[in-house]
Length: 395
Image (cartoon, rainbow, N blue to C red; front, top):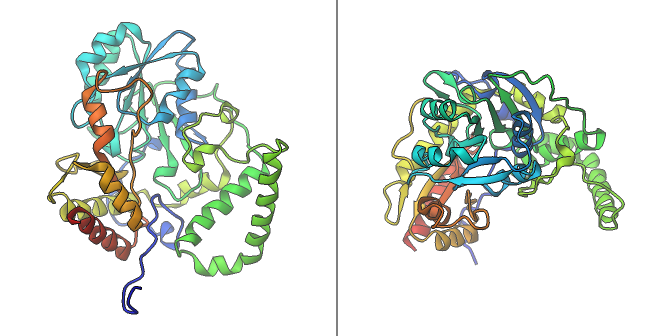
């Protein structure tokens, strides 16, 4: 039994959650975001934005789309939705796109997807030149890089199109963005997803904050509506089990890798769009960079681990803090048992993508564990997480 003086284990949110602090303004230097890169459309997830971007590129059945061998499983279904074929290209030990392999495979493809892993951008001038040389459309995957710049330009402005995932950077239940610096998006017509969707997004975004001890006064004020909402949700789930109801929100909001084309023409919720306008990108970038550096200083030189990236460059707003771990499965199990949230990007890879396709992708998929560094972490939560990871590494 724990002693009476033992500190309580905090619940650490793996993604940003809504709090009163979410709306504070920061005096830090503002980094640009994908919203500064060009024309925008606000959709319900990054994978929906991928599908729309490929459709706008004119991708047709039988076309090849170059996809990095280290990838989220959610990146491939939008390619298959259009009847296209994913062509996996190699990456370097730190995720850098292998330009020679891309050039060799370019004749088999019409488009290239380039992922800015964890907020650290690819060599965009080189990729842009390669795509122009081979007649490839360039899709910047900014799912990890909503905020950031390269050579003084916003991420998302080098590609023909770019996509981003609002949920990874903002305290909202759903959201993605399609961006184009080179093409109008007039043909991308979106419509509201309905009152049920709007209500679910607002209430779920609030409840996520409540679950981690944020906004206690608002939680008390909304006690009765939330009880009624829970009862209505249970009834709806029971009807869904009988095939009598459809989903109010895409499964991407609950960490599924599925691609549901029924959401392809749906607009992101009013709650999500207002939140993006009201929160401070400067605060987000400053706190994420500070949390990343604290994690790096505390953990980056411990035995059995190393940072995926040697330093945090100016202009980068990190998604998470990635470590390359010798015993990733064992450490993930110990951290999970202790209550530390861990992200395992690209684990597993798409079926058939293995060391024969790309040794570096296979290694990183197995070995990279990432810790949250988002702006809504409290100092005590960050300190506890650091202490717990240290203990798990020395256990």
